[in-house]
Image 1 (cartoon, rainbow, N blue to C red):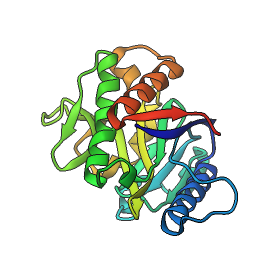
Image 2: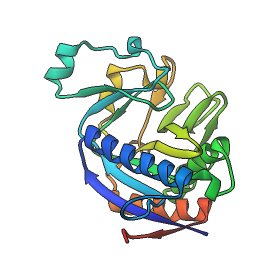
Image 3: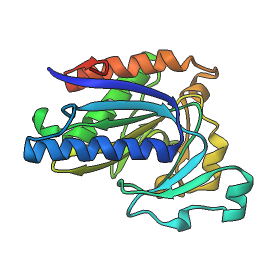
Length: 231
């Protein structure tokens, strides 16, 4: 079992969370490669947060999948960032749980493919706790409901970055998300798939803390993690 710091950042600007990720990511790589570090020794860490309205485009993504112009973005008070994760365009906003694991996968004994599989498994188990059946869609990352059917809809997006088997970025699970913001993009580059949320599937608003607790428990079980507070 691996000790991992858990830190719930609450509602935080995307850029601020990105800078924090970058620091944790680079510090962990530096310590891993040199075994020296000034100050506190870097740890594996998982960040949970929500963001104000923002669209992000992955390094292989296309701005053609953004369906509104800069003026409309400003009018809607939505920011746009091109970032260094995999995947195409997605939306983050209030009511969505975003998870950023900064983990050294070599400490867990598996590679990036298994890591993505484990993230998906964490989400699938969490949704099952709320009586929502979900699964994977061939050829696409993330977690889907009614996958491989004409009604396939994504409930959780995944996009990660890794270097020297250290990860950053992660997942975005729609809980009480305002799904209308997805109408302004082709989510993850898809033009024939829809997006959903836990609240839409259940027909009610959920307590975010309840979903977070379920996520933390399932992640601990799937990854064999012992979550700890900041030392």
